[in-house]
Image (cartoon, rainbow, N blue to C red; front, side, top):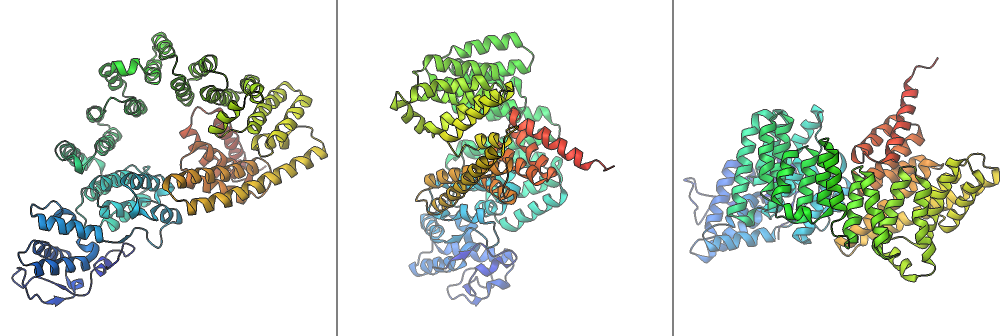
Length: 623
């Protein structure tokens, strides 16, 4: 079987075809005794006619002609992909079956030799994955920074046999972060045009229109309307060729485009069409409401709350979204009434209220969030999973708000019962917390409170307790390193602890990298990727805030972001590492992105202020 290699670029794509195939006679009809010519001498239109004739011969009456046409199409490889893909739907069952067989027999090498290593790693074994796993890999490509995955996604648009996945790959290209730089846009357009070639797949047509949009968005608005209407029609009449999420994301992209060119009323009309695709589940309602809130589509959210009234009233998180909307509109009393109603919803469903607290915390609604967490700690059994989750999240939020004593006391309740009840330790392990790390975190919060109170003795005692409980707690080690008035023995011991912790993180990084490479399933690989990202981030955070190899810290931080792109905490670390190196411009750049992703984090905002001050000072002319 001929293997077709995607790493060959246009205009050399015709070299995918073998040197000789049967072509039609000079009058254009398929002759039984056809001549053999070098198809590389044919222009695309002539080659298309050749392939069309061969596909028709797949349904010929004579078995020998069917077999011969099949072998010649097989030899053509990916050059025949588009036509064969279309032929799958032929009314002639012989043509349809043989076209499907040929498509399944094609072997593709999805990665180019010059693709980034991360792209090659994601695409490894792509053909053997389930549709859901393939979609997950596409999303990983779409999340890579600086558009690294665009070329690979375009290949998937062109050669992925699933219509739905092909369209999803196109949407991931279209949803790449926009860049006003003309050279960058030109490079993106060239990549798209090169990779999709002459493909007639629906996703390829979308990308051609997208390329035109990069240059003159106003000129293609009508074309996008036709595209979205057509896809809605396909979904309703041939659902196997589309998907509600494909239609939704296409409409969302169109709505955002209309908003960018100040066609607000038209944008809202398109947004309303997305609501028709919501199936009424809590997950879809919440996701849709959040998307609408980002675009301040208040009236549409109110309409949704009315249309799905029962769903909103029975779920605390959804009710809180309505309360948030009312806050944004200045309706404070009404918002508080709605929030009070949300707090009383499903009081026995502690998990729902932990989720509500976390959701409110992420959105900067700290008073409501704290009330939710405290409600869970009062009602859930002490040491239960919900109690632990609520306490861990509440303590970190209080720490971020510089309410250190309350943060420590929140964890103290867990520490007090851990030694008496093994079930508490087991429950903590289920959410990846061990007794040592919990004690260490509690002592860190107590130490920070003592520092703020000016009690150096208590601060030192708690830091010693913390490092004994968990010698790898980066924040404890950083606090030890920065302790005011520390004597030389303290400094020496602290440096020894830091070196040991850094070496331990290096070992973890090597071990998790091996686990990622040898993972037996995509689920395991995803788990080890998260662990690898965390180990890299821990090393970078510790070194960036103390001392050591700052270049190594930057590399580790960048690696964590390759594995977990657009993670605000990891960007916060990268900013700190650049600050440690004295590269204040890059520190501000990455920290600003962290603030964009997590605007309500006090820690992240405080670091940005520090980095900006350092940058401003460095730019002042020296006297």
